[in-house]
Length: 244
Image 1 (cartoon, helix red, strand yellow):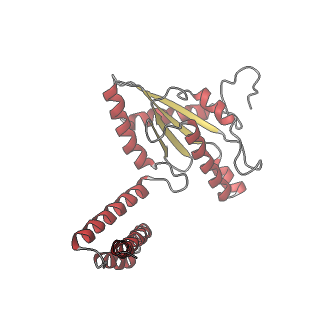
Image 2: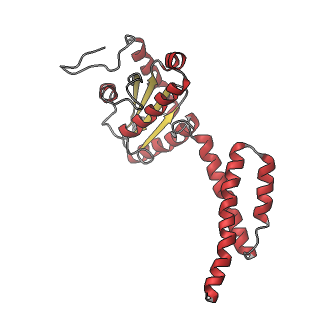
Image 3: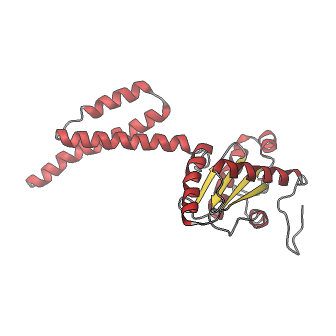
């Protein structure tokens, strides 16, 4: 083995250990294990086999990555991987700033997953969780540009929202028709995906805040929900489709 290979091997060990410490540190911080965090920080500060400059650089990178990971945890819904309400509001505000700057319309769609409480009570919370995850997947399929031109969020237990610049699914009828055609995940024992939907439109020449848009779309969703018979899963069906 040549001298360069020996040096690379020697450097590989502390770098590998640094990566391991970084992962363990993030996990301990998320779990709130203060004792473990303290020990891992100490291990990180005393990492051997690197120059002082390399060690400081690695320590800073690890701590910055941990801060980023913790920030993601505070902004993300654990069950669906979508933004939680805080993350939705923060990212939605930035998207509306872009829409205002570029003079582009945007649309906020507010969803309620109908009958989730009843599903939890009669079929168990595990089934309810499957329905919630299915809703998250449905939103990703419906709005595939999320993260760029769209923001997706789970705002509360059974309420979700999308902020999008695309007009394709900015109408209740188009969304509900797509939902009615969505196959059930996990088998046919699951109830169909039943939604109440409200839409609010953003005019860049008369901009509103994300909070105002949420309020308007939520009100429209509740108005839709009030008018739904118990088993309605879509509105405005085209000829040949049965309302039920």
